Amino acid sequence: MRNIVLLISISILFLFSFHPIGPSYKVKRIVIDAGHGDHDPGTSGKISQEKNVALAIALELGRIIEENMSDVKVVFTREDDSFLELHERADLANKEAADLFISVHCNAFHNKTVYGSETYVMGLDKVDKNLDVAKRENSVMLLEQDQAKYEGFDPKSDESYILFNLYQSAHLNNSLLLAAEIEKQMEERVGRNSRGVRQAPFWVLWQTTMPSVLVETGYLSNSKEELELNDKLNQVYIASGIYRAVRSYKERMESSN
Image (tube, rainbow, N blue to C red; front, side):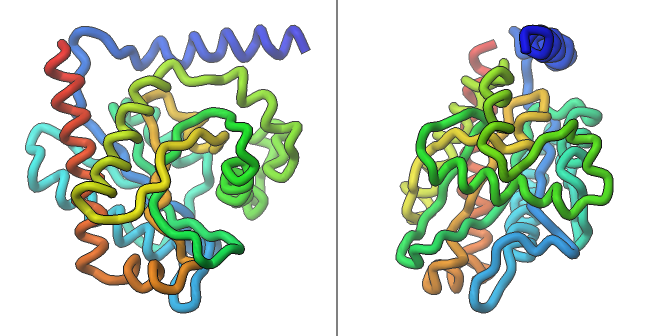
């Protein structure tokens, strides 16, 4: 176990040495990830699937950023109903040397009265529901043919998440800043119910080497919110809220230089 901890510590130093945040830090490249895709529908409501709603919002977010931030390059992990493995999404962001990684999703819960947005950053939380959400989103790796790349990680096992606690991101504070701004915009500007910023061990956030967030834009299990999430105008509003958060974050980070 001691050797494993040492190896992980060395890996952290190695990974983050390639993406420093210092006095010259600027937000110039953003990777936007639409969760799920193709044979992985994600969660489902009565009339829609997560993969389609997430894609629509992600594409709208990219469009708004490109139209309003001429100095920022947007890279999508997917722009159609295609499937990328979890590690491919993070690998793309790392290879692009992205300054931000934003993963867009929809949520579900057995209590169908629950509704609202939640923005997650990498980390462990003692709240069982947060771990349940992470297990559901991480379970996509079970659909992949080559699971050896995940080095024995079992998305359904509580024990597998213990090591995540050792891999707290060097970019956690900045991720929290962006996440808080997203939830603020969702509540104050978009008029949605914000369920706040949370921490959970999402594999896709664990593997990225830049400030990263996963936005659960709403609950498809709530019939009213499902209709809202599928409404094109509401998708624009949600994407606009995330854009405003990114803009605020960018201004804050670059002004501090």
